[in-house]
Image 1 (tube, rainbow, N blue to C red):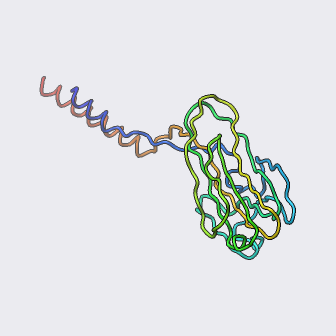
Image 2: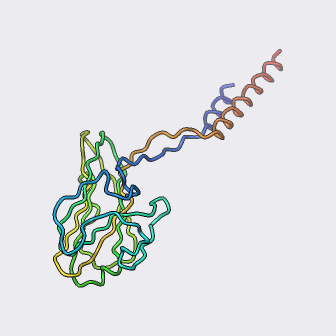
Image 3: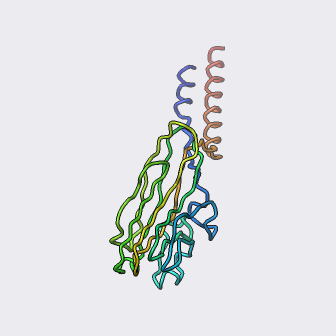
Length: 211
């Protein structure tokens, strides 16, 4: 009897976990910068804005989303003379979090002579910090952040250009995620009930033999 119960326990599947993104409007699908704050200054062109990835507003260059889940919009740094930071404050309890974002430098901007620098950090962890020199490819920047003390932590992206026709930068799929227990699927319940049924039948047969 004990062996049967142990076998049933071992056959019970572990439930998977599902990620919850704590960043508001992390893929910018609202069509605006809702949830975000822009600080700094920008001239010689528009400042950071949300635009459609396949729109002509990317100066004729079509930029495809890095994944279907990311949607069809992204935040676009485009001013030729700027020192701007796009930021958001996220409350985090103590624990470990998956963090990350995607970035794309449009080819049309990369071909401009003006220099640009970009950095991205989440909850104090620097994920990217570089001069923009190549483009045309989505890059994913990801890591983990271990939070010892609960509180508000920043998600920051800073873009600097220095005058003249300069490079551009597109940001998308920003996330801070913790794992939560997933709800078991119907198939899981069916397997569990079938196992219990087999145990019950085995116990009944065992009692019948002893009688």
